[in-house]
Image 1 (tube, helix red, strand yellow):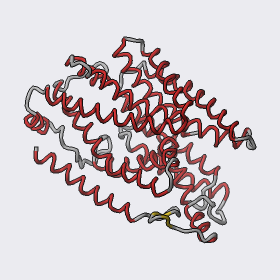
Image 2 (cartoon, rainbow, N blue to C red):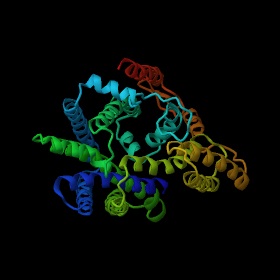
Image 3 (cartoon, rainbow, N blue to C red):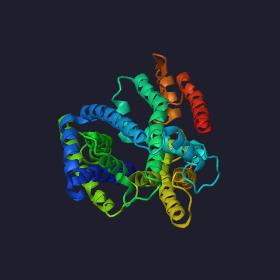
Image 4 (cartoon, helix red, strand yellow):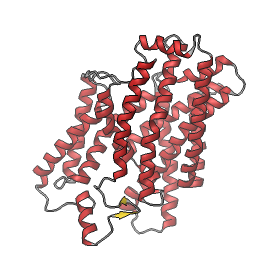
Length: 412
């Protein structure tokens, strides 16, 4: 339920961002654009299922990357000063340093929010989010699934750096001035250059990025509703064809549900990216606690967990309303409160449990041992709770990334 609520709100923000592009290009009212984009994403999600979602995501990812590169080149060519001089000026203004070691928890972008808060955030988003996990389940085997996560770990820094560079160059190009709506800066830039085809490429890149998120959201929300609610509580003994039909109906339902908060976002000119991050941060702590305790705790029970989730949301509401703590820390705060209260409430309400759940890490290790199942396949662990040696290279890569970012700022 927490996944469905959080995904509805975040997907609505993505839908609104996509509608802004269509509104900018065509002049169409953003409300109509929201409806049209929803219908397009809905049709190919229902018609093609998970296969359509994954392959369109692959195509759209390439369009996004190509669009970002074209924007970067166009921006560099239209700067008032050479790139080197521009970066030197940006450095003096403190815009090029990606390594901020401040311990001020009111700042969003610091090394500590990245290493601590955002690590917890991304562990939860990529490991306990059906929209991401469904891609993993589409892999041929566990080894391929783990390779995909490792590839993301190695390649993501280049995407982040590209958009970091875009951001500071746009700051320089526009002289740091404020915009009535910062979500359309890239479109304003493309329009001002009047280069044939550039607006279309940029619009395609932005729409591709958004649509890849929408189709994944529709599919994952439908799957969760069908398996975790409909099949479990309504109709447990139906045929596969029946569940397929039900999942398509739920896809339509969630597509319509996402439209409602998307309409609400039209009343705000705030950053869509910031909205996405803030909304997600409220729910990530609860997901972190639920999955973390489910995997590793012996004594946490359903009643205790629900108590912890309620307490976590209550504390986060107070923190957001009465402090200036930056949103990345909401995951850590919510997670700590959730875990602490859940364990305590479970012991008070239900007492100590005799054994681990079968689906916990310890329970799975015991299951593998009792049934003499192989722990490895093609060099990758099958049993949960074991770390593959290939993963340790990511730590080395992380260290190299920090050094590279430091040198980038020093060598400008």
